[in-house]
Image (cartoon, rainbow, N blue to C red; front, side, top):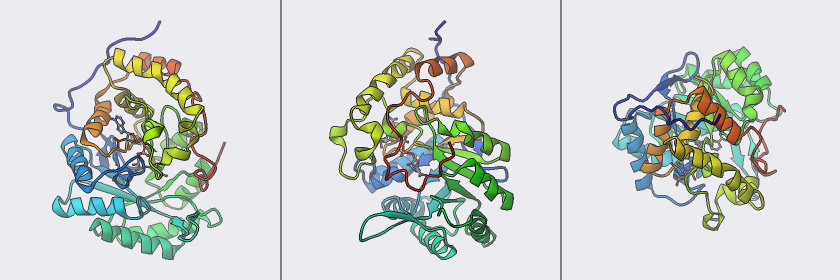
Length: 346
Ligand SMILES: NC(=O)c1ccc[n+]([C@@H]2O[C@H](COP(=O)([O-])OP(=O)(O)OC[C@H]3O[C@@H](n4cnc5c(N)ncnc54)[C@H](OP(=O)(O)O)[C@@H]3O)[C@@H](O)[C@H]2O)c1
């Protein structure tokens, strides 16, 4: 029998934002973070004022984890956050990343996990953010030929110097995670994970749980596909990440919109928005999973935060699985170029 049961929920205004642990020895942070790549315009234009309003909304909602990187707008995202923090210090835990470099003459990306590069990028991030340490520092992409043990040594030095609270890796395999964790505790792994990107279920989510590592789920909204209105390619600017992404180009896009339509109907039937339901689904994958939706707007962030207050029952989860079974998506999550640097493991 299909579950169309209204969803139990708690009024966010009355409930203190739930918290989750950022790794075994890490701080407690809000159950969802705020993805701040969006402050640099990968999904459309925005302004510093709009970004600051979004940060103010995050504070009001009890969201205290910010996710950024040195390459988000080549410093723009961190600068916007830094300008906010200078006026409103405290409250936020900050995670940033380094390890991706861009060849200025060709625009090609390559990866550098050398001690000198990581140190100079970390210093530059601290300066843009206007802080003397960040809570979490990720290797954005691994440099394939550099032993992970050497990279962990470098990160350990930054930690002993008090410049970072903990470290993590983005888009790495369970085998690499285990090798790194054998040298020193990894606080978090960050990978794409959502209703239409389920690869982490094939070992990475489990490895994180086993080791006590937080699994930070990026692109939890499928780059906007789970929004009430499906993204319209006619509005994608030249810099829009989705412009060359297989899932957002035809014929895949139309097929994906059609496949997700019953999920949006289901969300409406049970009294939720599709965005909140997509976030709630991720939170139900395990207590170590921390989704970091990205948005430029305070109202969209409130919608995301409402996902924390949805209490999904096994019947709701079974119905979601029936509507959107693992592997339903049409097209790869990355184009060939976008996939460079992601560690494959299955
Ligand atoms: N480690 C990595 O390699 C990596 C890669 C990608 C992303 N990330 C991190 O993960 C964060 C989140 O991922 P993401 O931003 O790429 O993808 P996402 O969170 O899945 O989706 C972002 C898109 O959803 C839209 N959206 C957000 N809330 C909405 C709502 N309530 N209703 C309708 N649309 C909504 C946003 O538009 P609006 O701005 O208009 O709200 C934006 O277009 C990033 O900001 C970044 O910090 C990390």
